[in-house]
Length: 100
Image (cartoon, rainbow, N blue to C red):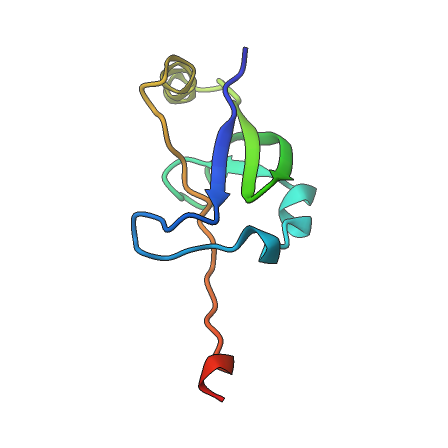
């Protein structure tokens, strides 16, 4: 069975920032939900399936292609739980509204 991932939630992340799930617009990503390895643009290794927002979490199931030996290793490590996290790679914008 494929393992789901919590892509982001309202929790404070390791960098001390918070992405508010209710403010996410995933419409563009849903059109082409590719998964990149280590944020390497131009090197898609799979797709994110069953993408959805539940409560305060964005959840999906990564499906690694397995076309290359490296992808096969990555997929096996994800399924075994050796790789346990992924990163949304969100672009964050700040608002000066609080200063007004």
